[in-house]
Length: 260
Image (cartoon, rainbow, N blue to C red; front, side, top):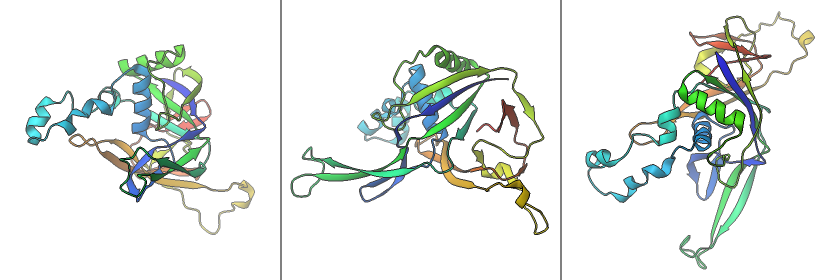
């Protein structure tokens, strides 16, 4: 197997959660699979969610609307959903900061003056190492575009004023599956691994390791009929792990990863 690896980062990122608390919009703590597929779609020139906008213009029976639309999914997701991706965050907890905006276009708010105050929670200086398996035609097209720095559209981190920095692009060949490992360096599905528990007789003082764990439900795909997010629980930890099912793990350079 070949894998294309690159570093993805930027000054800010905003991967908006569907839930809204008044006018405060929250972000996921890490980039997720659907957002990455959107970035890859921009690089390759595929259509996004706007291609589905005509659904909003038809107030008819759902089945009639269904016949009119070009695809069940946005083009980027339809073409790229089979890609295997691994994500290694540079930090356990990426710093977040709330930004405040004034929307004074007049029709934004019914309040006096027509001024709407919007708050968004942004990730600050996020950075991830991204691995993509180069197995099919779309994977090869993406690897070629990344290596040649040939992007159709400018990729961004969840919002078009958060430009994405893509650096250190490398094609890694002959990546093999491994069955023996102590830990997984990438984000992984919670149900795929279980923690190795230590008892009171284990001597951990000599290891001098601070165990960390990040866990969050992140979008893993799109639901076919509504294109709403589908979620699964992900974990990022340096704790010793063991497989809980038949998930495959790989050794890439000095990292143990699993694809999602």
